[in-house]
Amino acid sequence: MTDFLAEAQSLFEYTQSLRRDFHMHPELGFKEVRTAGIVARELTSLGLEVHTCIAETGVVALLEGAKSGPVILARFDMDALPILEETSVPYTSQNPGVMHACGHDGHTAIGLTVTKMLLAHRQELAGTVKFIFQPAEEGLGGAEGMIAAGVLENPKPDLALALHLWNEKPLGWFVIAAGPATAGAELFKIKVRGKGGHGAMPHLNADPVLAAAEIVTALQSIVARNVPPLQAAVVSVCTIHGGEAFNVIPQTVELAGTIRTFEPEVREKVLERFKVIVYGLAETMGCQAEVDLQRLAPAVINQPESAAHIAEVARRIFPDAAIDTGDYVTMGSEDFAFIMEKVPGCFFFIGSANKEKGLDASHHHPRFDFDEQALPRGAALMASTVAELLRDKSRKI
Image: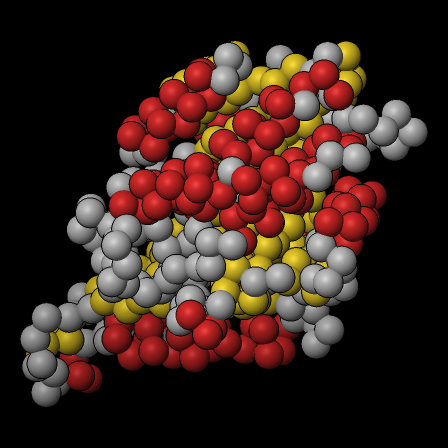
């Protein structure tokens, strides 16, 4: 059986150099022009069929095995975040105000490494691997855009796989669990309109600041009193903007935040109560409210059979690793869920933190960085999983 871990480790310099280059030149969602260009160049150099400019900056490549068989989609995201980097590493961002603070630079480098490794074993594969290098995962609609562009057709995938480097857990840890993996996410914006005026004469006004304060407090009752205690939800108001002067009650106050849920029925209840509370409290306070709710992503729900297979592969490759196949979930969201609504599959996590090296800042933090030894681990697990699925005729996909 192929030792993909040894192969990934032999390619470490290649993977690391790509990752550090991407890290130095981060690009926001739908602007990954340089990144996509490097991805397309590397894939083309391998002799693969490559399609570019999918959903603006996405790249798709097909690797056809020596024999016919199922189609496996392997997705890797490319976008960075609008964050000013505060690390002092030699490969720090050269694009001020933009940073790879979530590990997507590593994902893209892993994807190219997996492609290189699987291509070397093409004669052993009975089926096709569809590599998807996706733009704009960070809440901008990248997965939806690629689906709309037809990436789930010609050929249609039978299984979808994706991974995420995960700084919430240490190097050597994996989570590959059936069922929920990440939460569904909504973005909400609220505009509370009142009647402004002098701060010393509040009785003549309809204060939207006070109404907004009541709304912020009351929204917390949804999770506390409307969601069953053994189910999960989050309602977070993250921004409040209103007023310019210390003695002037403003006309409007704007709020924004996020809602996170797993089960569809919980989501429906949370959204229903959200609207009732916002509109009702605004009216009670003599104001009017406008609510804008945008669905960013559904929950990622892993197929049990896929999760079990990947966990089996991980135990064999990493016999001493901590492999969590239990109930670990995160309230973070992931737009790979849109793909998994149409194609069964699995989204798994690769522990990447190293506290002793100071590489344990959380995702989306200005000092985020990870232990690069996670790169060959992720590449080996993805390549081994795909290869075994396309070799084992007894295993149904």
